[in-house]
Image (cartoon, rainbow, N blue to C red; front, side):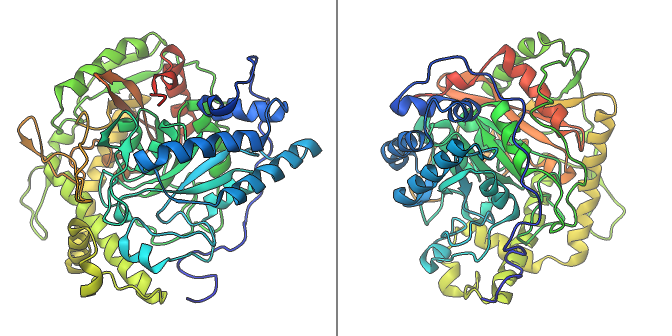
Amino acid sequence: MGTAPSLLGLSATPAYAVPPPIDPPLPYTGQPPAGEDLCFLPATVQLELLRRRKVSAVELTRAHLARITRINPAINAFVYLVPAEQVLAAAAAADQRYRRGTQRPLEGLLIGIKDLFDYVAGMPNSFGSKPFRDLAFIPPVTSVYVQRLLDAGAIVVGKTATAEFGHKGTTDSLAYGPTSTPWDLNYNAGGSSGGSAAAVAAYLVPLAQGSDAGGSVRIPAALCGVVGFKPSQGRIPQDAPPLPHTPMLTPGPIARTITDTALLMQVMAGPSPLDAFSLLDAEQYLRALTGRVRNVRIAYCPDLDVFPLDPRVRQTVDAALDTIRSAGVHIDTVSLGLDQLQVHPLHSGTGRPATQRDLADLWLMQQSVLYAHGRDLFLVEGVGVDLLADDIAEQLAPEFAEMIRRGDATSAAAYRHGDFLRIAVHAAFERTLARYDAILSPTVATLAVPNAADGGTLGPADIGGVAVDPQIGWCLTYPANFSGHPAISIPAGQHGHFPVGMQLIGRRGHDAALLNLAYAIERRRPWATDLPRH
């Protein structure tokens, strides 16, 4: 491989300022617990205890490492763990900063980083893929948003599991096997950021980072009962190609509470010269959490007009509406008009109504082109892996290998033709958001996804007798990746012993307002204490 700058990562050094300390301090009046009970505290409370010197970073780290040792073999959230002595040394350095009064915004908090294009220089990175695991690929640089976390004092404890190159809404791979939701180990955590969501839900770490090209932050958040936030496109900058035009990919935080989510956004977000598409304005996410949402208007479209739903999911989200209304929010049940969109064959003026299968196929086609570009990227960079070489392709998930082949076979005209439908989805969202502050729906259409035994866990092939694509078609998330709007999954409640998530889609660029709406809902029905404490 060549030296940086390279296509695999443009920045070996940060090109931005470290965010200022978070002010004012977050209140905490309770007595600190001890041992593993420290793991059950929100990140913001852990941070406050560290600031007040009520607990040390080393003590906090030992508690989390002990829990990781005990729990991770069962749920498979982390696929690589930094040696404990290195993590403890970083915690000891954090304690020194607290003693000197030079602590940074996330000083001493543990975090998990997704094992995809979320690089940590010198740390193994497999993309959830057996060939890259066996190659022991190590990126030469750190991704810009990961560097911001490090510069803010977060301690990376390891890399979290992902579907192979993030190609589906579950987390399972031939390299590592399935990642389970802590609610029931026979069922999948969702994906593709399933390792991050499972790690947060199981109290292995208070914070985690994911990435979202079709719902990969929100889907596992829903199936694990935590918060997953996909910010507006460009809100968190990216510097590690391939950066897709569509569907729109963005990093995003995963946490147990909205305040913890805002804490991560305060550090990760902001413009960077390394990303030509990064948004130039800056928002104050923590200060935006006032909980004042009276007269906010929500458009409730439970099926987004075209998706079949498990009635148990619909019932659980419907039951959450009264909680939302109690915050002073007005809710109307509406149609977004997605069932009125038209799809046309290439070079034809004859259209027909688009279905959810058309929307899913558009996502699969455009993502396939991204993967074909990724294959080219690794060859250009001299990584030594051709993803479609016979000895490599046979080690890939069949669906992923087929997506690369499809991407190679897709013409530029066909790829751009897909933008007609994508832009129509964007326009439908904009028309609704001109009258409402947010759109509400379930996050996924199914209650739970059982793990497969062969490394090939997929979602359901039908919902209520209606055929859906098992990779992505059961997820109501990817339309927001067509449009670039901010979207968040928060817990709606449980059905039996499974969590159900609901998705809020906000106005483009109004990320802080969307977080505040979610915060207002959380204040009326706190969900973090619902998580199982095994």
